[in-house]
Image (tube, rainbow, N blue to C red; front, side):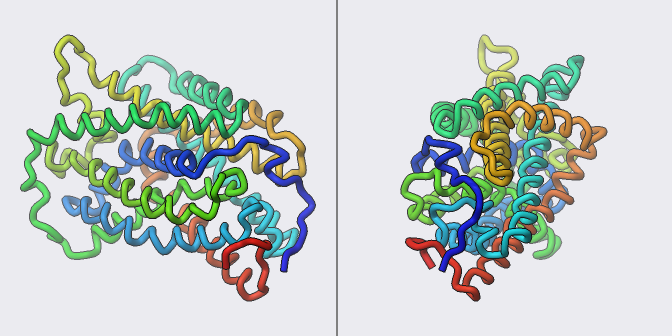
Length: 376
């Protein structure tokens, strides 16, 4: 049984599509671009030297939650989340839920822009106003968003291999000097600390599932689960790479450092290149740019659908301005950014990633609401 919703389908707002592979690597970039910069110090402060256990457990915990999100989306493979939330919950309740998700995407975009500003101003350009980096980053993302999802997917396909090579290069360069005994003793304070660390990492592993809410724009949508089973373990390996700062710097230094990944990059000396960390950070910068573009795109596209507009492009510039403004208004200093990422945002993400989708899925089962051709 299906119910019709009074809004334009996504393919009328965005005529281009991406492949399941492009969707999977967009998801990968969306997560890895920031999770290995600020989150390692947050996880180290919670899980201590057992952060590597948190990385493994987070993948295990994320799997059933991801299955819930995918199962719900595949019941409505030609509908966006904005559409099927109204089909299942009713128009007004569904519109309210859709509005809440749009606000979440806005917060993610603004937080990512602020992370970019913090990285550039603290690590490299200490005398330049932070907002300049936000304007540049969001301006570049607006260009990608204006050109559509297919362009974002292609740009990411070019940039991601470079970023991964740089990540592997950093790990390989610092591992010879790592003291693996810093990981010992295992479970020194019991199961609690790594479990709490795993919950934090799980929230960020699943953050990219906002991409599944535009499933109609992904070719071969029924292969989403297969793509997930490959992508999530790879993200787990990337999280393990993020814990290498513990054996390199020691536990105490790791959770005192704001951005352990940047400090790792600074440990590497390339002959003839005195500031090799800047070259390495270009890879991260590119990834963060793609992440902002994805959030910016989803915000403009899904807001246009929610509001019944025929074109999302008039919203690109206004939302770009809002993202930059919020990146400045939400936080007064770096400490507030870290506090928000490590606490408030974690529980907010978990609520939107699991509680609401699970609730909608159960109601769709009880009321027997699904799209023809959907997977029960």
